[in-house]
Image (cartoon, rainbow, N blue to C red):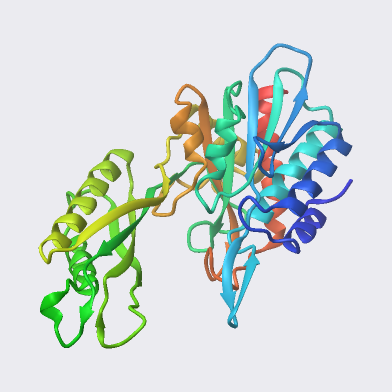
Length: 367
């Protein structure tokens, strides 16, 4: 049987961007079919995979989800794809756990379902899987993520990682061009966009809440240096610990943008580029994961549940199917210098630990 290290080595060398995971998907599918799973490729006309193992006995449907896409970077001036968020590790761990579970005959009741999902980084991969019906019959869903070294050491794991909601907005500010010698004849979109950034920076929620908003991209170029620009684009990153706060934050930010640019006669069109909900985690699944961590690593290795300002499109599943029990855990990997860093690396010896924790969870439910 191919080891988790071999799966990782293969997947790490084929990084592909969201909805372009053709080689990755083909590799995973081939190994699932060889193991004995019933596999549906190109799920909902994407690179996603859904695989099923039927026990033949009554019981719940438990699904394991892994993401497959890499991140786009510009390194030494060259655009490239690179696995800097650990999705290659996620797929390797879930694939290895699935292979071992079927080889060892651990599934005694119910069904084991596997979701290998594209485009997590785009925030739309989970939505595509949901639209195709991937979780319509799922009773329980488990996902996980490698954790940075400062959060969780190798040999430990977090039974519940509560991700924040994240919304990425782009404001296109439109003014009126004019010669720079006659600015009174125009409406400076650059000035209006700057006022929008300042207005957004003045937005506040209750100080007891965890939230943030900041401008992360500013594009404005009239093509010449002596002309008033008539268009500017600003991207804002919004984060909130709870979905209710995100609704409030997004409403105030959009109002601040429109009202601030209107003061100079400009207008703004606001478009949502990406939106991911805050964590919705089931306590029963957190307890299941904690028991699995304890079984594999010992009680001292079970870290406290924690919140993170990061976002995860996994929680689209939980929000759109609130009756489904969802759990999401974090694996200690010694990951440095950080997620999404071009030089991200981690201790590969953590991968078999992830396999064992998933196997323990599945066995407790379906064994």
